[in-house]
Length: 429
Image 1 (tube, helix red, strand yellow):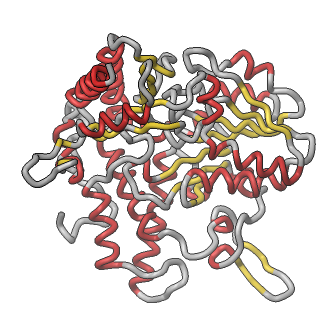
Image 2 (cartoon, rainbow, N blue to C red):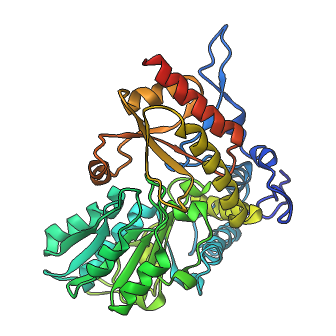
Image 3 (cartoon, rainbow, N blue to C red):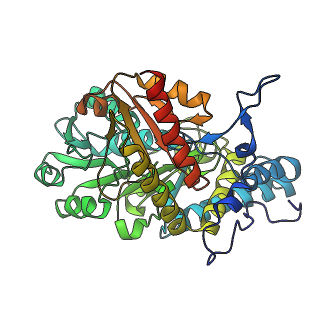
């Protein structure tokens, strides 16, 4: 890549109006060309990476943007008067504009940088929850939540005595919306629900969740860790009070995520951590704080990671989130069709309109054994509880194997998944 290219700007993988060219996209991801399990005298297996729900691979554009910052423009941000500090600050803050545009937020002032979605939810729990919730109030979760949207509320419950209620999940993995509407009782002050399940793939009706909650004066937090990767997200249309996502699932680096908040909601929240650039003035008697979002960003921020996230957003926007979603839906349909005729295979999560995530079990084979055998074939899937132990219990399984598709996966890879699963089943008889 040319050193004169603007930092954080993704080279177009293909024209926005061109047919989806997945082989062209794959050229941007160096890791996809490597072999796995290669040994002297034994060729390796081509990598089939289907663990995207855990963390996606990074395109060259993101890697180059981060490297170029380190090689040409790196300095600490926000307070330096020298050239490099101002350059680094501009590049880092440009990502705030990119995140705002990516979510269609009204303003860059709506965007708080965090380390990841988990930290963003903890920020909301400790800051918003610590101020606006009291003993006897209730937070409404769903049965499909990731631990990151359960534990922070339990910590707050143990500290101040709030209650937690859980909206059930139907047998196909859809959220029970009738139960949800009935559970919006007077004691509920906050609804905190995932936009898309990391296990079931279920895409919850976010706009309806918000509409019903708002009609009863509830605040709504949506966990967009999976949704922001697979589909366009428009926070002005969905209208949540708070929305979180993480960079590393969106083809960006680890260590960077974002919290969107409606301005009046962020303005009502006290600082979460103290120190560094979140202050206005400090004396030993008193400290005053900056306006949101900056008062939630204590200490030196993740500068390199922030620039990497900006490049990742440029990249997916260049392809187009609608195009990515359509491509992944084709892969999902192809893989589901191929897996459906494998005897003893049970799909966990079949709700209509689900994201390209497939969790499954096979009678008589532990998911870890499935994962190990698939890995020997070069197919990387996730196995385990996926940080959703209550959901595993709901479906009566100890663990599942999970294949999750990304923008660079192909129909051939979807078929290879099914072939490897069938071979694993045959191996175990």
